[in-house]
Length: 469
Image (cartoon, rainbow, N blue to C red; front, side):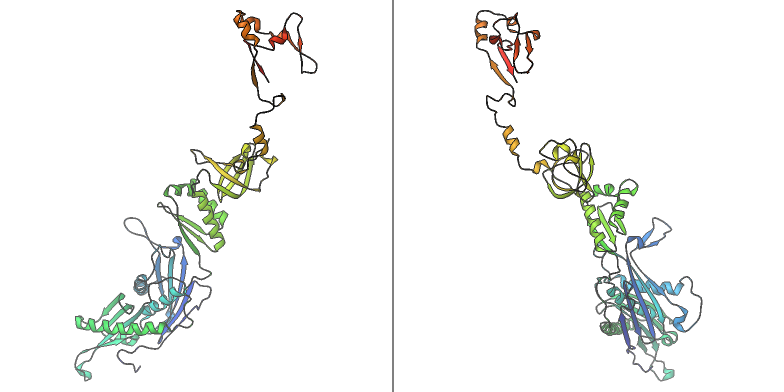
């Protein structure tokens, strides 16, 4: 094709080819073209690998390489991936895996699908270039950009007028791969290599040839990365609006079982109430929430925070909704999913026969936490937040002497009892029997018995003392 030994075929790249996908790119180098598509998901979308021994493994990042017969102008049956597709996909996967963020920084399962639309040499390295652009278009915070190039070698034999030295070729085509003596694929950035693979058809490669090939491959990668930077339209570098939202939060490990509930009932109710897609919990207290919109995500966060919070006595909760009523009180939601009991005696400063006399279900009130029992149940109070009423202040003051209807019981001592005690009068003489006192029709004045004498001195005395209500 008239290129020099280190010449690179024309490169063109575009991002956002599939607007509904989370990320996509179309990378073209000469007659080789790859369409890369990125899909983001949660832990449930991880690739499970069956092992002969031990437990199964899960991969949070995997690249699937597809090489249809139409890419080389052929007609054929498309079935399960063959050995070539698995090998090329694994090479491209290793080249991109190094630049991915950690699970803590980007808690997504990442799937890259590279479909070869046209092939004339080095389709696996085209998958590396297209996959890197698609990752950036999906908003994956990659550490750097990487590119791949296929290096070849032919001997400058004396038969064709050469001196027998090796010639290193950059960006080999299919014919150069088939007729050459080496296929050396190298992927990385300007500073290092992330993956490489070599196919040789000669007895061996010397260190001198390897060094020359690596230096020439580095220059080729630098050129390809510069062309990728000219991508038009460029990658969005942000999450697609169609990508799921994942939030990670930490709770106390002892709260994990409480959030899951018996048979998973609690976590299922949280998912149903909030509308999120999934909630994943780990034994160390890590909770991952996946949602399709921000509203359901925030709702799930609020419910979990409310269920796992540690309330302290004396905390005040404003604008809380009354969820249900009982004859003995009202259940008030102080946080999403967290309720406490406000006893009927704590609902008002006045006496209430039942909670419905003051509030209805759905009313919002301010409450104060006054007790947490050994089971973690909360006791709330509205009365604790009310200012001290005037009636309470009046009840604490002593009543006037002349008011006998509302005054508290008072005890009086008859001075005559002291004289009787001095003369040796017995206590039996000072006790009135019930039949000696009769209530008058108006209920205020006692009637005097004819058989008694000097009743004014007795005055319902018992051992010289009388209790008057």
